[in-house]
Amino acid sequence: EAQVTQNPRYLITVTGKKLTVTCSQNMNHEYMSWYRQDPGLGLRQIYYSMNVEVTDKGDVPEGYKVSRKEKRNFPLILESPSPNQTSLYFCASSLWDRTEAFFGQGTRLTVV
Amino acid sequence: DQQVKQNSPSLSVQEGRISILNCDYTNSMFDYFLWYKKYPAEGPTFLISISSIKDKNEDGRFTVFLNKSAKHLSLHIVPSQPGDSAVYFCAASARNNAGNMLTFGGGTRLMVKP
Image (cartoon, rainbow over all chains, first blue to last red; front, side):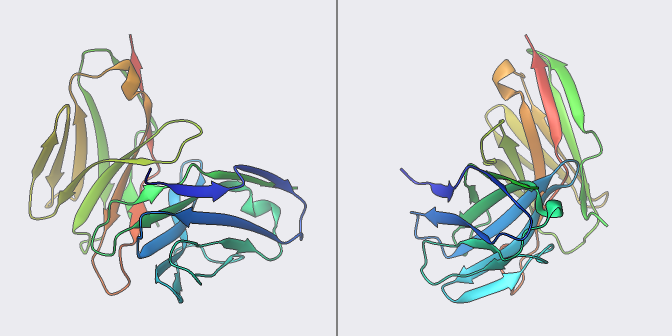
């Protein structure tokens, strides 16, 4: 089954404690990205990657890091989480020449 | 400043009637538009799209209309069904060297009453 898998689905952490949210896709897609969803703001892109070892900032990259060492994986790293990073996060992937992105089920992060 | 706006945060419609969800954009470089549907506790799923070279695209009960001069698009659902109750996001894309970046609107929650 074609899918994008995120883990964990839910996470509560404390300010400053490093965390990683994993994302994996099994569709051999070149393009992967991370979004955060906040009320009234829709989904805003954090980082994206056009292929292995190629990453770039989206609209709201501050406080986040990513890496793309393998085509299927695109982890999101919060080195020092803060309460304003409490949000619902989605990973997405798509073929290079298509914009119909497939989304994971989301990770609800709470930073206290 | 939001480049893609959905000015109605919610919409309530009776089953069997038409649902019309609206979206406005400001960036003239956008050339591809999409609608996504999102149920609670799930990720958004692609619904329908339209290229800027067209003004209408239809897929079953779903039709998207694009008015480039007004920078406006709309999604029509006919007839509406209770299972259509979800949050709908409008998204836009501008083909450039940076790849398939999607800019999303804030979403409209559709409630279809039986």
